[in-house]
Image (tube, rainbow, N blue to C red):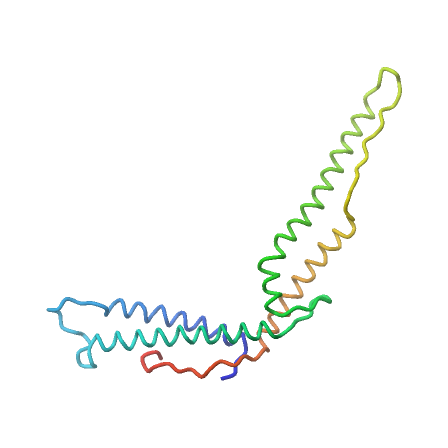
Length: 192
């Protein structure tokens, strides 16, 4: 059965709500005192009902696996080009989850560290200028030595922001349009 990734993700949310209700129902009918009347005796009994519910839960869980597998397959095979960089969707998702946040912090930390060091040296040089020396000679000012390309760092920060903004849009469009092939729904009657 064909659907988009967005539809598949929506179905998973619905399935999870249904699973929660079925699990509660199983818990409600899982046990009763022997002397109590079975409230489902006329429709086959609580034991039969619980067995059907457990099968339905299993079917729904398998449906989630099937949808997730189809989504993973699409993510592993389809590519997106974002700001000149092409990766599979799976790689972009890994990049967004595990790479970019530490990278943003690292780059921003470098820029801030250089800026703070520059201010510190400027303040030091101002205080040196104001101090007369016994010999009347001027004390040499401290210079800042920067071992990275500051312009490139700032450009990288802008590029990261641009990629993140573009990537979110591209992923939304991908999810809305990418068709996935999920095996037909084979729920039991109790699963519906």
